[in-house]
Length: 287
Image (cartoon, rainbow, N blue to C red; front, side, top):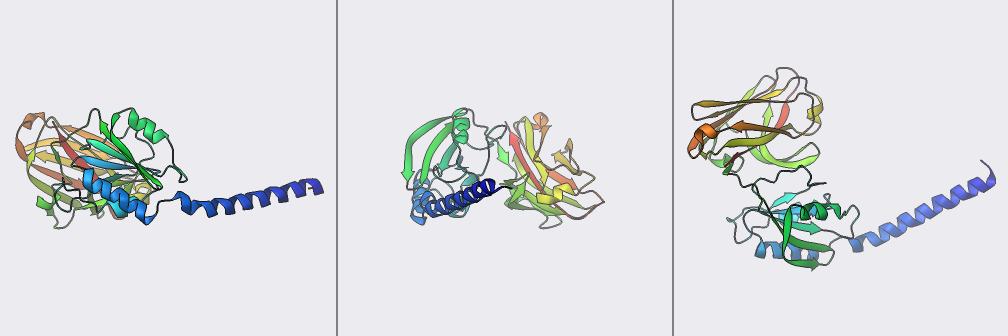
């Protein structure tokens, strides 16, 4: 490398270094303060209602989950948390049970993109004012065609019976790179876990997703099998694709019992090969 090229390289490295230092120096002013987060929490505690969710932009702003996840708006049952959505895109995302989305933006933070707001505008209408809260911006959007399930089985878990006892819990776990609110079970090789729900309102379909948590999704060779019974009717089975990371959709016809309430039994059967599998399942009954 000649002297002119070396000098240019050194100059470029120095410029990048100075840019990095300047970026880091300005970064704190672009991020929300504790007071900003508290202001957002107060707005949501005052104005949010059942069926609301908070959508983060940028999705990495998980500080919101710690601060706002404890928020219990007066319109909700005591202690009920707000649903927090960390999604890179709304394209193809189902939002069961969500009527209204609060778009919580950090407009000056790294990773903020206007695309989420544009995607939201494609399926919702803005309602009410936009709240400017320091480095945060918060606005409510009403979904034009909300999908309103008759029941979420995860929400009914506290009244369900698991075999073996404690086999299922409601957890927020990472599946396919995103946090998912789901029924969680740690499945032993060749093991079976079963959960029974009483008095579940049925409509035309039972729909949901399954997925292996985190890196364990890459290690399996055989599928996890989900079997569903409503009342005395075996609705069918679904096999989570083996060694396939993802949040895999399933749908089962429940029209035979539509308009009634029934006992619903979910059974998970783990493959005999491999190690323990951390497994997530969400299921909703739809009108």
